[in-house]
Image: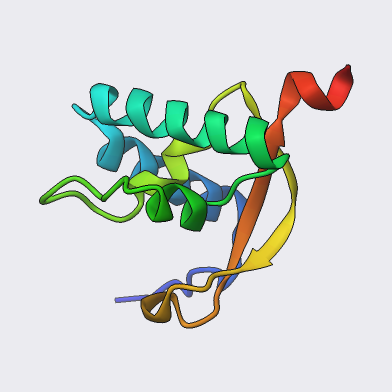
Length: 109
């Protein structure tokens, strides 16, 4: 039997797995996503930018029995445009880099 070494780094496969994880977490959560996106949009319009930490601080919680991957789906929407990175202030996030988002129409106006 011959074993084939899988590539250590495969960008296409990484993106496929990311997208599959977000889609699986978001499945059946359209109402929650609409609510979270509305909160995120309001924060971004008020402050000029928004992160997942901001949305959580506004009281939006991860739905029960749902993967935290759903938070990536919140900003996977045409309203939002990536701005830059920030560090998470949530202790359980261990100061990880998170994305900061703006409202797309506000950036092109």
